[in-house]
Length: 258
Image 1 (cartoon, rainbow, N blue to C red):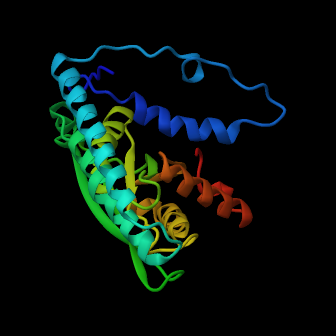
Image 2: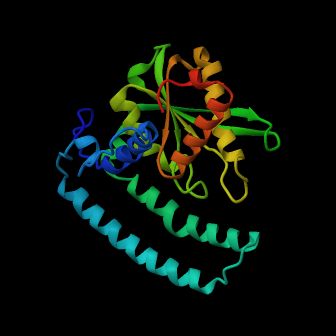
């Protein structure tokens, strides 16, 4: 996808499709015919990729294949058990050797890093008590072109990683792109991960953050009537769980789009 802000070419198809697919699944009712499409929403994928990106992408795929083989071999060494000790070993391996390194490497493309220069980053913590006293960390990415604006649209994001791996910071390069290209303030939520945090407390971390942003919209510089939530992979589960909680508590007016 070629962007106007930097003139660079970024492969954002997977990231955008992952966020959109959650919404499409939620909106699909049983009485609606299933969409049969080769491309999401019948929009053909278009655009060009720079030669340096193609080479970097090929190198990344090669590393991923090598990592997968290594992980499968290591997992075979673990004696599978239904107990916390095995879970922690498995998750630690998953975090250290697959998700986290790949996210960091793909996020370090020069074209993506250009967007960071156009973003002001701040942080705050949302106080919660549903699983002890814990302040949920939230990173805020505000496009510099929105400086001084007091009623911006907001996007509250839950990162991927199966709800057991990765972190908010590793997803910042993609969110910088979204913030700049759409003119939104992005809130990147560091919800707690399993198995250290049991369900539904990770969902509640995100749910409480939504309520906090809505209730403090004026001081955060966002329009309370233009708040969207989204996430990919495990983050989609976090968003869906939060939507269920909002429905149960008759709070669907907290957000505009999911």
